[in-house]
Length: 319
View 1: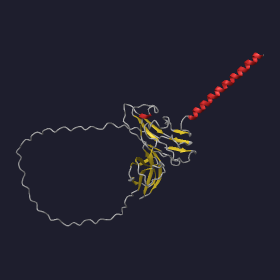
View 2 (view 1 turned 180 degrees about the vertical axis):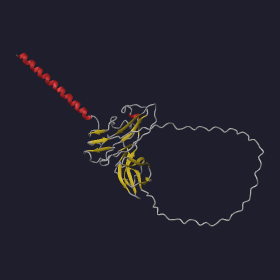
View 3 (view 1 turned 60 degrees about the vertical axis):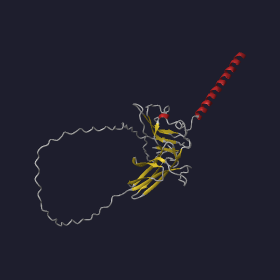
View 4 (view 1 turned 180 degrees about the horizontal axis):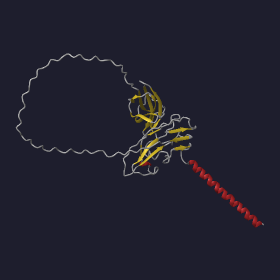
């Protein structure tokens, strides 16, 4: 979960900031995050903003095939980019789990059947002829009278339908000339419990979750790496008995994608960092200027010291 705000807690998180939370795996098991960032396999990203004063914990996953006997697991939040600066940019990781999956089972052919032994012929006497049993006419037995029971049908719950549209003009609304996005993961959670998950198909057919018990739920989207959100990453809804709630999240293809996509990203958060305090996330220009000013001040001090020594020596010679 994360929080972006210029105000102190418990002010609500600014959901317009894209936290870009991801899970990653280095299949070769190298521990240097910066040097080997191009070889790390990253899963889908998302922005799990805090909902009011409560945490909005979401699950992020990634799959990779190990290249040897060791792998390295990473978790990061990439908060760089224009419009991402806030006084408080905090991200918390609750727990991590690594699941190993073995190779697929092989098909072992069944053994061919062997020829069975020939049976031994014996003199078996024939059975006696069947006896004729007279038929007994059926009697009319009255059926029991059914007793009606007042059994109410079980509750059916509510329905949540979610879809992702291609917000090409980034206005946060689906226009008539805009289609739908595929590969966006939807998660429905209640508290810290994930209730259901689904993935958009890129068509007008929404992903619907039926049988949702009445209550308050958080519906969130996690976009693939080549997309960026143009609407809020999550929404809180109320589900009642027999209700149907429809939601649409917006996203668009990143405009800066191309060759060198990974290396062109802003510098990532150092490994193991849980938060990024302050609002300067755009480079090292200010430290370089301060260094030049400091060198100039030192040079000026040396010149003044030399001038004073020159005056003292001149006075001594004059005396």
